[in-house]
Amino acid sequence: MEEVGIIIALDGTSCVVEVGAADACSGCQTRCASGGEGLPRQLTVRKPEFDLQLGDRVVVGISARRTLFAAGMFYLGSLLSLFIGASVGHFAVGRVWPAAVDLGALSGGAIAFSLGLWAAKKWNFIESLASAPVISRRLVT
Image (cartoon, rainbow, N blue to C red; front, side, top):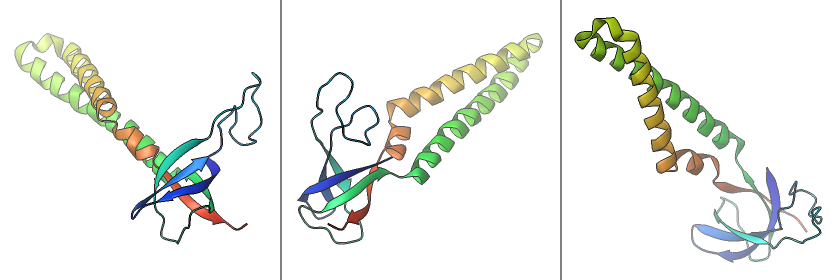
């Protein structure tokens, strides 16, 4: 996903980019079906390696590599917590009540899986990995 924006402020390590209004597809910048025009929004983005000046038109997007990494971490982390919780539940309940090891595995897996999802949401781990916008290039005008 990429959008064209204009640099409106520069700092030592970051810059503020004003991007156009997001409509249904955010690509054509036309009015949406309701007939209203959206307002431009401002994004604070880490300054890229190349030089920028105020008023430069740039392309801002979300890195596909970071998005895939975040999705992988989310799914692998959830599965790992599920398996670890199931193993712990299986062995813990097996020592106390050997006939209910399956129930212990199911309960331990469900609890660990839920706690893993809760922790990822509470600390915004996945969102911070996936949705950090970057400036990919400067447009020549």
